[in-house]
Amino acid sequence: MSRKIEDLTPETQEKYFLFKEKMAEAGIDYIVTCTLRTKEEQYALYCQGRTKPGKIVTWTLNSRHLRGTAFDIAIMVNGKILWNPELDADQDGVPEYTEAGIIGESVGLKWGGRFSGTKKDAPHFELDEKL
Image 1: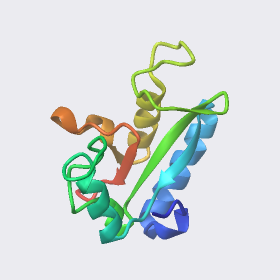
Image 2 (image 1 turned 60 degrees about the horizontal axis):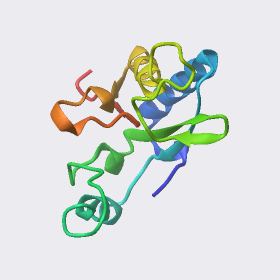
Image 3 (image 1 turned 120 degrees about the horizontal axis):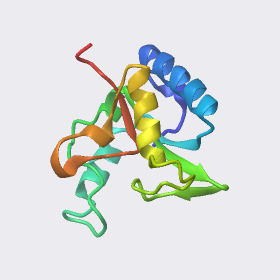
Image 4 (image 1 turned 90 degrees about the vertical axis):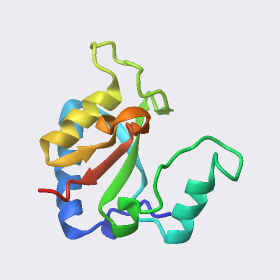
């Protein structure tokens, strides 16, 4: 699995750099945890929680990560990863992943935190291919 921004499509890179700039302006620290995946890596993630031990972390074999049009992040608070997407670590009334999601949407990305039903994926951002 790649974490390299260069592995994203040029249009996704452009959106990512706008996202990065606005996250810095908002004072939200994060790391990129995934950009491009191979089919084999996606299949292994899909099996997790189904035919292999672990929690289900993906709902599709046709992820946008396969095309380089998606990236995942992890919010950092005081140098540690904030895994709970509902946590409001800076006590401003808005959870950090929600703040990141709003920023992502403001630059034209689709945010996984708005996926329907139980498929919400707060660390996930993708190119809105419908635009």
